[in-house]
Length: 584
Image 1 (cartoon, rainbow, N blue to C red):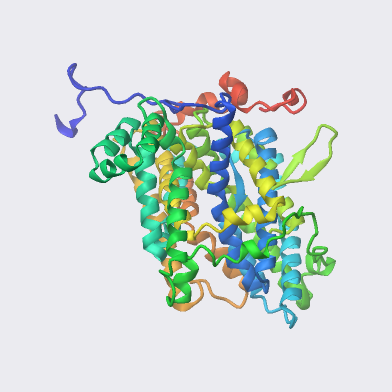
Image 2 (cartoon, rainbow, N blue to C red):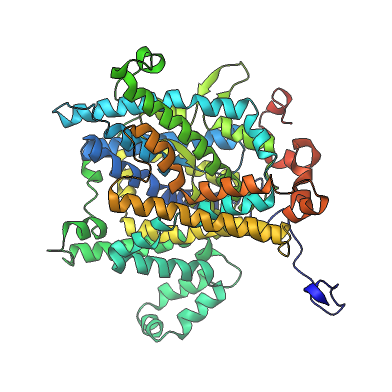
């Protein structure tokens, strides 16, 4: 038959049925594991989010003029704010088990502030504080756009037009698009990063019975059995079939093993005489955080001084002397729109791996608003997420942690309580600086190895939405292929051009305008998501068959909070607040 479109024969295998909730998840949002297990899982989430909390200040603080002491304080502050934001997000935002941490999105505009040429102070510490106060002011002013998008319901209206088809490139490249932070980071110290990656994959993907067989069949293990029979008998007890010890806690086990191995290489002199770059990546004693961090310190708002605001800079754009700071504010506002788009992909991935139903648009809009602002019953608005980042002075904004979304998939535990416990660890170790600095000193290649697995899981979450689409439709193939290809190709051009020339393809006298174009179009998820969203909502979308090809009919019952009873279970506000702040 021409076209091959005949009906399937009776004896042909049926396709896998689509599932609006991910099966085989051990603990979903509302079913917490036992307390001992929940505490260990929460600590594991804390370890995973540490990577971003350390990498961003390590990159920014030296450029701002700060030393190890300032870097340690910024890391403490970022951890403290991340703990507060995560708790508030799980209580009053989308209520998903999403960790809210630092964001690479805001690195570029912060660097723009650093390079603006307005900081001539000869004292590096004074210059650091001035740049930090300027960043605080920019974040506070720019956060207003997300308040409007979240609580006005504007983002809810945008989300209503999102279909499974347009969600695929957005979520997939929110994970796959971060490939530059994966193996390139592992290769900076291959003798540490590669063992971490291999051990993590072995522990997380082999069944307990497979690990047991590996221990029994390996000749090396036979030798060890003769020497350490007691320990291995206990190990065999741990990995007996039916107990998900190694796969659920693969991060803790693998990081501890490789961290000890890296420390032995360091004290054994393996890196003596090596280049400074190699020593920084490989050694376990080069972070400079443990000595610089205070024993006890509670971060507080305006700890670097009052944010630098100026009415002339905000409203009198004709005054050339004040144009620079206005430009910085504008950069942050445009990038917050870009960031909201990426956070949407993060929330969708988290909802999938937490075995929740697709997010109703009103809940997604509530989450976007809560990442900046919180509406209390008494009607008082308090700044959260990006606004809190500005008040406390993290030098960075906040967003959904993609790596922690991937950890949900690895552990198959999407419990809200686990993530709230991890927020407790963030607050605890941000106050007890010395103890937190110990964990923050984990070599970066170990963290990069974790990213290789977690970013892949988030990318796979995006691909999983293809189950709702008609992949035999040429329209589907065009939108999917074209958006993903350009989502990879356009940022490659922007990044390659920047690496060769030292500046982006858009290079005018206005740094603010350059960043508005260059930064978003250097992001794979942004380009692919925007392109897929536009094409999916403009190409013949009114055709009833096209609607089914897009998978839109699968999400119809989640367009409103009240059309599916499961939304109440996963997304309703605590303390009976839905009565006063109903979701639509």
